[in-house]
Image (cartoon, rainbow, N blue to C red):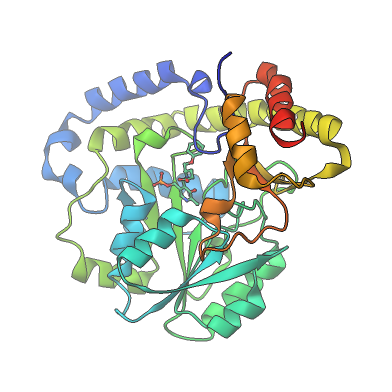
Length: 366
Ligand SMILES: Cc1ncc(COP(=O)(O)O)c(/C=N/[C@@H](CCC(=O)O)COc2ccccc2)c1O
C-alpha cells in the first residue's frame, strides 16, 4: 500500500497551475530581457517593478499599507530574519511563541541572540507574559499561529500594538504566513495595517500559496528600519532570483494568482471538512481539534494512554506520514497533556481521507 500524508510541510503539486506559470515565465523572459541582465536585477531589495506589484496586492488582500521602497525580497523567511537582526542592537531581547516555529527560534539561537519563549493562550501569544518578559522584538504568527492554529483576535492585536507603541525600541515581527487561507472568520486586518506607530515589520512568503521551492519571501520595513537597512545592508545582493521574481509579477498582474488562491481555497475547504467529519466519526469524544479556522493544517489532541513515540512508530508501520508537536515545543518539555499531532491536508486528496483516518485510528487506538 502507498503512503498517505498528513504532512503540513508539503503542497499538492497536482493543483499548481504549471501551464499558466510557464506562460507567465515566457512572457517575463520576453518582456524583461532588460531587467534580467542589468544590475538592477541584483538590486538588494529585489526588482522594483516586482515590489510595486506585491505592495499593490498586499494593500488589497491584507490591508497592508506600504511603498515598494519598504519591501525587501529574499530567498526565504530565515534569510530575511537574519538580515533584520543586524538592524537591532546586539543585546536586543527577542521573544517567540511557544509552541512556535522552530526554524526561526534555532536561527536566532545560532546567532546568539538573547531569546525568550512565551506561551500561548486561546488568543495567541500570552499578553501578560509578554509584558513580564518585556522583549525588544516579538515574533508572532497572528493569521494562523504556527503550529497551534490560533487566529489572533482583533482585541489581542490592539493590545500588542499599544504595547509596542509605548517604547521607542519595541518592534513586532508579524509573520503573516498562512494568511491566504481563512475559512471561518472573515479576513482580520494585518497588524501592519492597524499599526500607526511604525512598530510592525511585516513578513510574507509565496511558499504556501505557490510553491515552497520558489524561495520568494519578503519583509516590509518601517521607515526608521529602512533607513538603517540602507546604511548597513545595501552591499548585500538580492538572494531571490530575478526570473522567479518577474514571473511572479506576471502571475499576479494577470490575475492568475487571485484565481489560484480561490481555487486552492475551494479544494482545501472540501478536504478539511471531509477530514474533520471522518475524524469525528472514528474518534468521537476522544479527539479534540484546534486551529481549523484557517490554514492548511489544524492540531488534534487524543484521549489515549498510548505514548506519542509509540503512536509515531505505529503510524510509520501503517505508512502514514504524521507529525507530532514535539519539534515545536521550543524550550524542550512536551507541553501537551495528551498526545497531539499536526494534521495537514494540503497533500491529502479527498479520496484518501477515509483510509488515512483508518490508519490513524489503528496507530492510536487499536
Ligand atoms: C511560520 C512560518 N513562516 C514562514 C514560513 C515560510 O518560510 P519561507 O519558505 O522561507 O518563506 C514557514 C514555512 N513552513 C514550512 C513548514 C513548516 C516547517 O518548516 O517546519 C513550509 O510550509 C509549507 C510549504 C508548502 C505547503 C504547505 C506548507 C512557516 O512555517
